Image 1 (cartoon, one colour):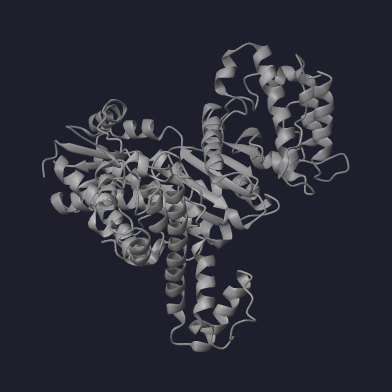
Image 2: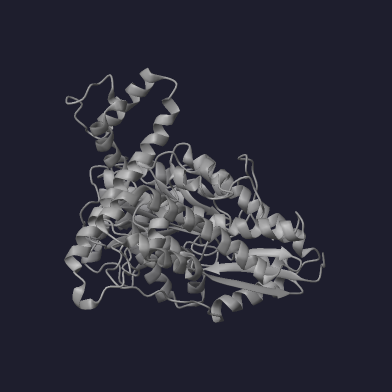
Length: 610
């Protein structure tokens, strides 16, 4: 294997593929598909060049979280990379289409006479197999050069084909056609009846709902086939969960009752699809790939089936009125760190070690978080996305964030101390259940970007209301637990209403303008160090804006402590610094009031400190 050649491969669109989602299953389906495709390229490279050919990503015993940027040592031909990638994608598409054809054949023959004799439905799937992705492949004589070339190729090269269609658009994204067997039928415009087509589409997705529910039910009941009593008890529990009336049925023979099974299948199928959702081919593929019976038909998917959650009920946005906490994070300047280590004496060894360290951390994050707090959806390298279980209050989420850097980020696969060479930035969104999932994901991304643009190594806490408005506050990791745990109101309690009302009243009188002393005095009145009882910030404003202030980066025991304010403000005028500090205190009041006022939910808007 020639040491002087390195190959890099990636693909697109990744972010867009993930963001076109409505349910948590869509996110899981997207994440597993992306990981499966990247893994397919890695396995082919290892078969062609040897087991140590793939430098990054590190290969673990988990599929979820395999990063999409692949660096290979040796001459890995472009045609092999394309065949591996498109072959894996084609296998997924074939499994999903095959399942639909097999289970909906009777409906299709009845509703669309002659459909079996034309190829429009098949042709649509073939187009998506061939044209859904862009693949970028480059080679160079060093790792740093090949990664620069890959970044340039992603920015400048385009080899993309748009898929046209006749008919209505998907109700999820609106970007592509609704997937149903009558799609792109060759009918003259004067003869096409849109109302008739719409009725067929609704009926088709209702049929799909029943078939999917039946598949889930059969898979679930197979675990009880040797114990009839437990089987009937389980059916009774399912009936209670979905509020089904058992009176019309023989409770001792539920499993044999076709009407009961159909009603139960309908409720189970709604977890994946309803006739109100009319999805495109790739959207339907993401949803179906989370079905074990479909994933089973995909070659080399054994690990995926092991990792798929057995249920999404606990984090189903459609089945709860409680708010939920979402987080999205990323390692700070990971690309810069990679460029640094790839210019050292042993770049391949350094990159392989860093990739292994971050993938081990992703495995730890998922295992530790999923046990009690919620679900980690993406944990690929230094990128991660997760959701907390629905809860009336964000107490557990905030506690987890307060200890995130030391107890989560700087941990290895077994929970041991493992300090990372990069820092994390996270966007946390506490959102009403009435907010669409797509909007929540966009706000997660925006909150993460705000954390990075405000100086990195910090978290942005954002409260998202049902109307789409939001309030946010940004804080360094080291200072967050001091603020959260150090708050006391005038009665020595932790009711944030006092702080919020004081800030609102002072802001309404324009008391903060050009005067940082008021914001500083107010902050020190309500916040003290929870360990020492000392004030968290200096008492005088001239000391607050001095170079040794916590507002600016300071030396810590193990690493530099990021400043409260953005580093660039240090070079600006004092007026700008004072304005930024005042805004930081006002934002803290707004967000703290929403997150910690126990009696209040966020289903409606509440006024900011105005």
